[in-house]
Length: 275
Ligand SMILES: [Zn+2]
Image (cartoon, rainbow, N blue to C red; front, top):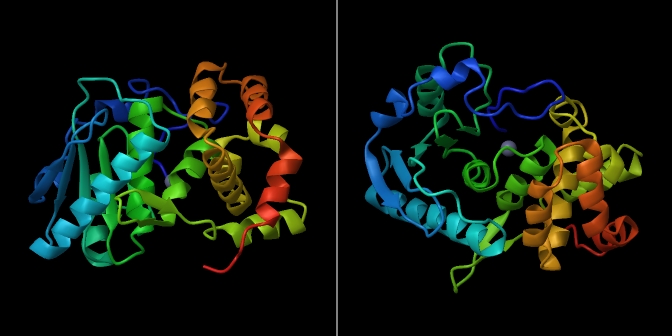
């Protein structure tokens, strides 16, 4: 999930054009959490990692966060513009602490889930550590991508962030992205005839992506990104995408240039659904 205000047409509104732009740049709720460490990765804004955690837990999570930032830069992200402020990465140890933090950050009745979030306006990632760690990696990927690429269409933003829901660290420090997370959802959508094709994806709005067919959109986005990554086309695809007109026709042209739809579907058929 990503906390964007949506402009008509489902494209996230640019910073500075919403009421939320009047928020203070550093949320007091974040600043009050102890700083566990700061992470600097070349081409990425400084990551200020905060929370109330044991030293061992903090060390492990700092390594995990660094691994995601390093991997995303190596795999597909251009450098973020210089001079960006830090991103606060707020780690809450259980659901109760997470909910208390969110109420302070967003106010009561905020309607957020208990997994994690990224707020571009506050430059803040938050995660509930009693939930799978993939949620933290996912929200962090949203933050890194927003800095480096600017706001993306919902299907692409969620597909890219979902890459990191299933990732494990190899000995060399690189991340291995798993190919089972959401594969069942992709196959179910395809079997029921509700999987969007490239044209439907290109014209999809955030309302659709976050609506009743969200599993179809999230899973399709994730596997398109994995397919591009496997062929070392993810970086050139994103480069072409951010340069193309942000219209359905513009998106469609880039998707068709980089994705052979029948070949993509055939590739997903070869994937082993067992974790
Ligand atoms: Zn998300």
